[in-house]
Length: 326
Ligand code: ES4
Ligand code: ZN
Image (cartoon, rainbow, N blue to C red; front, side, top):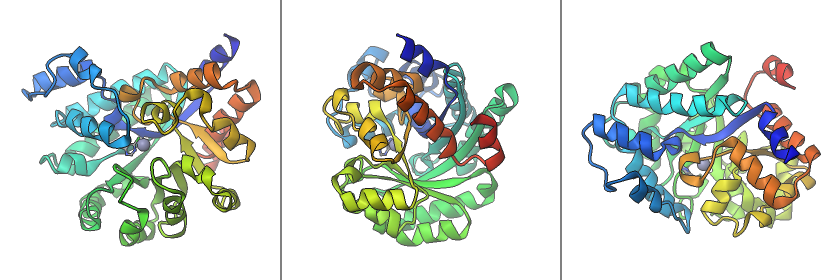
């Protein structure tokens, strides 16, 4: 189909991507073996058979197990480089990726090991292909604000490698306001701020992300559509939504790709972007997300261009870098 070919060719950005969510089963088993770590699942097939989720928490339980084989700097490098090679082949020109330091610190993997592996891969992708990138450290919201503060302390020697701060993991029961003080500290460090909000959580959590955390953008934001005043506020503040279609389907945020609200979001004038979230677990990378929308939603060429353009203009690239791509 012509639209699929077009979507594949467009220069794209990835603004919502958890690097630990790019861990393909075969690479996971290979690294588990070289690190002599036992996985609960005995084969790639057995592991993949477990990728059936009815809610966010089902996925997260598997995601934390998967990342537990990452021990050494080279593991973080290999994971990141495999992802970057993949999306380079899909014409992704710029990535803004999350990592979850607390998911590794809790297992005794030092902050420096994690960030050095990831950062060096991002640098190498820049040298090889001119791919640009931002790195976003994310706090796990099921842990305490105190733990987030401790993580921020550990990050301080590497703060020049960190562009932004995110908030992820189990949303329900962990509203943004739980992290008011630590995000204030992050803003004082001139870091960009984003937060997962309105994926499973109610519109109230999106309000808190905006009013209390003072986010520069919103990850997911699907449930903002339930609140007209909230939609108006997001537009007034010109905030971006990093929308993840295949993730939404896999985690039952939407029941059917045909029901995906992406076209409504554009129709409303929201700055929506297309992203892949945890592609190894959700059934596809950037182009797979576009293909699913083309095949199921009747999205047209103008809308596809708008989404790709939003990906550039809503990114955290500097102004001159944006101008090169737009
Ligand atoms: C995540 Cl899809 C999603 N939502 C919340 N937290 C996450 N961490 C990794 N993927
Ligand atoms: Zn996410």
